[in-house]
Length: 236
Image 1 (cartoon, one colour):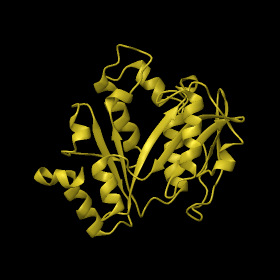
Image 2: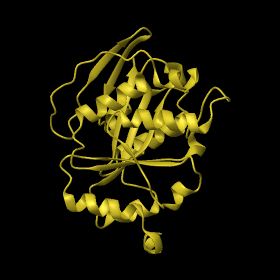
Image 3: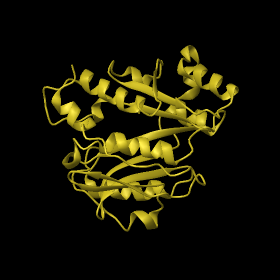
């Protein structure tokens, strides 16, 4: 059974918000949600100029110090084929999701060559000051409802050394289950793979969301990349 700490991360209070009609793929559409802690706004994809209008919550430090993470988001926002979505309270970012071309060798090579539809959900984080308010799940749902990913194969490679919990009693398996449930909420499905990055630890996980407009040829190519066997050297 998932512990209370995990449920706090997921959030029991799911904000109510209305979705806008899908617009141009890169057009920013703002929305907001009401929680008992205050209004949370969702926005994206944002460019550097938009991001520079917002500060960064100092608790967004899971991957690196908050100021360094802020600089990383600014850099990602300027990359081609990269996207940054945020949740913010007043003028402070309290959560973010970043998408970009894959970084791990197998998927990076595939995206550069035979599978340009492939992108990676490279990072998602919510300030622990806002755990328990449904921000992470609502931000994911808002992002996939307000940006057209239907022509993409979006992967998320979850490695357990990046996982953080306030409760040391929470096992990595509970955390893994939480991630699987949250990502599954927007259509990600766990995939079995022989990618060395995933096989480094049995708790690591590769999930994928295949858009409805992805061709059958691209689907088949992606499935073939999951298990390369002796062909792995060609992708490293």
